[in-house]
Every structure is written in C-alpha cells, then in structure tokens.
Length: 231
Image 1 (cartoon, rainbow, N blue to C red):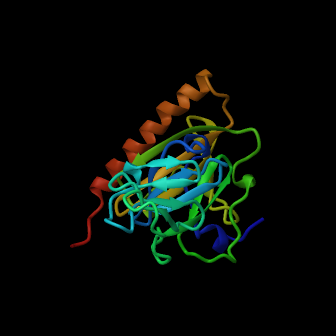
Image 2 (cartoon, rainbow, N blue to C red):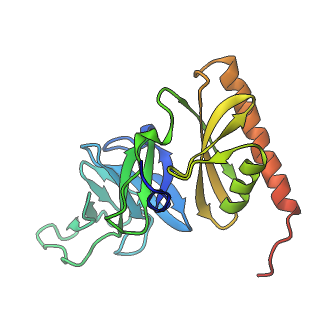
C-alpha cells in the first residue's frame, strides 16, 4: 500500500476508457491547472499543460497525430512523453528549436482512471488498482460547485470514511456501497468520481444515479449557505 502523502500528489482526472489511443483530447483541471489529456497511438497516457508554447493556443483544439500532439493554430507537432516540438509544417526542412517544449506532467492509469501528478516528484509512487475494490463498477462523475474540502466534509457528514492509504472515501449512497474519489479542480469546483458494488444496468445502479444527483444538489445547497470569505 502507498502512503497518504504519496497519493496526495496524484489527481484522478478522467476515466481511462474515455481517453482513447491516438484519438481524442480531453480537457481537465487539477488545482487550477488546465490540462490536455490524451494518449499516443501506443496507448501511453499523456497530461500536458493545455497551452501550445508557440502562440498559447489550447491543445484541446488540436488533434493527435500518431505519437504527437498537433496544435490547431499552425499545426506545430510535439512528441508524446517529452513534449519536444518535432515538426513545424511551414518550415518542414528546419529543425525545431531544442528548447521548444510543451509542459508535460506525469500520468498513469490505475483503478480505471487516468491520474496526473502536478508535483513533478518522480520518487512519489503512483496510485495502484487497489484504490477501488476488485469487481466494482464505475457509476458516474459529479461536477460540484463547491471547494474540495467542503465536498470531503459533506461526505464525512454522510457516513463516508476516508482511507488514509488511498485517499478514497468509502460509504453508503442510495443504500449501496460506494467509493468516492474527490478531485480539487478549481476554486469552488470539485469533481467526485463514484464507483459502486452495484452491477451496471441494474435497478440498483439507477437508484445510485438518482442518489448521486441528490448528493450534488445537497452539497451545492450547503455551499450556498456557507459564508464566503471576502475577495
């Protein structure tokens, strides 16, 4: 098992299945950092600052070209892994400057999620598949207009307990066992990724979806009543 300090550097961003090899680019946020999530053609997960270093255009407007990410503006291409610019279409015979690189973060797959480490500390172990119990199904992701600490407090008040080894929250939702992972996306915006022991397509899963929507509404209602600090 990893330590709590280790897992805290990693952020659950998106379902692994939603980021397809050599295909789509998914936008994400963690601690206010805007990210472009994608996979090279060989399936390796990538998490980059969502900004082309040439003209600062968002990478999420571009496209994946095999093992490279291509900016939508001038088509400059950057290599998976290193973020190094490898091609400038307007000057195909000119070697790109060696210092022209996209900002790259560590990314791994675990427990059916793509996780990102913003700290840049290679010594910190990535999360493992045991974050979520074997055989459990993904339920849904909730976008909640509240800060992450408020979301965690709300889960605790509803009987969820934090696993200090994995940063997962275990508790009841709609009378079914649930695991929740909380992503601190932006100020006053958090995401809750939910797994359950209920089987997909069952009445139990439908009940959980209803309970999840109610949970979001309750947390946002509580957040609206909480005194806000002065800007």
